[in-house]
Image (tube, rainbow, N blue to C red; front, top):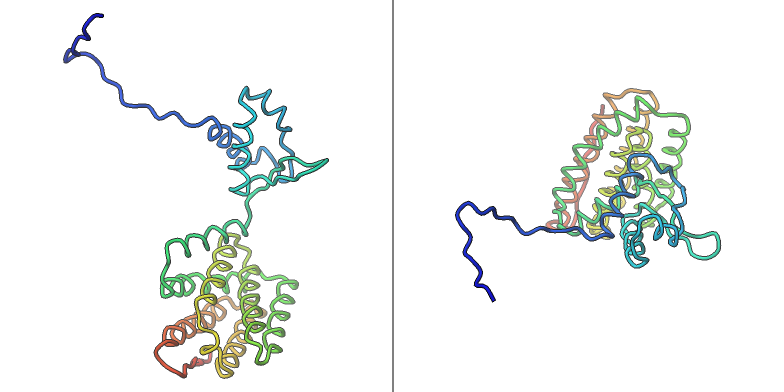
Length: 256
């Protein structure tokens, strides 16, 4: 057996190649076509057997690619007759879920969540004042009425509170802000000690602040909506940050 000859200085060298899995390649192609708009919402993908024939890949590889897309919520798998894989284009709920996973996975500080909310929610209120419809106003009024009617039911108050803030974002019409705010609101309230924090005084101040913001949105006064929302969320953040240091906490009110 001949002895291998050492490489000469001029012999080319090659780096180790990393070859992607076939399932990843197929998933990437379908993903790109969905995100590019080539495959509208609800479009059925070819049956598994046809995908095998069309791509030349194994049934196991095709199934793995579909599982990847299902986890990413880009396809929905329906079992039984008339079932199969159907295109699902990502919406605001996908963004909210992803943001919540990052918040929990990275253990984002509550202070950072409040800072983010203080940065974006006044803008949501200003957009709402400029763009709101009559239906948006009805949604805000409904959420506010539910909040006021919650009484001492803290869980009901919390759900109505989140609903009102989400209605403000929805009225602004910015899908990214709607998704971000939904995730932030749920994460902030999940991390707040509601039994000690949401006393009657804070609930009353919160209801009045919501009424003032809604009033500015109804009047299409974007500057007032931004200013009032900023005071509201900043005051809430200050009070929440003190909940573990004091038995009694309070929100302050400002006119304007």
